Image (tube, rainbow, N blue to C red; front, side, top):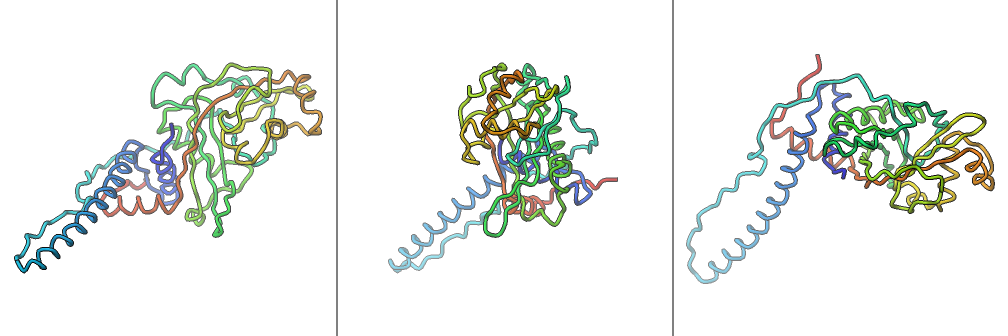
Length: 307
């Protein structure tokens, strides 16, 4: 399952690309993210202890003892941070099998090729750190309105660090539905990561899935060509769609332009197939990442500049 540390790593990769530096490695980000939140919990505990100490001191003063109490030095949690210098090398190669999984209509996913129509479902279980995945960027307006800014992923199992880094940048800069994200947009961004699991075998029943639980990957023929598209598990529920509305939107995303009332006939005539999958989307807003990154900077953790 995705974590907020994965989202923090996506932010780290995007920010590093703007700052012309190497991002911290995924394992380093995960460790620092855990230490950061552990320090928050400890600091909160220290505050509670200080409150109790003050109450006790007050009681002793009332008793007339007037004795001085030894001061307890509590070093800041950040001083316990291990300063590690690890960074991943930059990579310009991106996985070739990718798809947009958002609710925003695209210009059509286009005809499927043999390479893009197959999922490496058997490779999902090879290792804990390999997953098919999607990375989504949204912008948040001042009144809290969320707008999609980029969403691209892959059904091919990826080594997690490489996959997150590749698709954090691909979805930010190469989603053809939007202009590339600029550095000035960083403060308005939120990031969401979905790791995909539990793929089903293809079925011809377009309604054999559960709203809010399953993501969908469809394939169908139209005007002599094979098309496909996908929506992540949260999309249909987030949009308030029925199953039928979801299928119509998916088919149109794939390139079909027929009427809503004829989608089932098109599905049957076009030998439609559907693959279900699951994945819980986890998100992080820029201010949360920025606070963590400032904490990392104060700890003296450095990133290497690009040559």
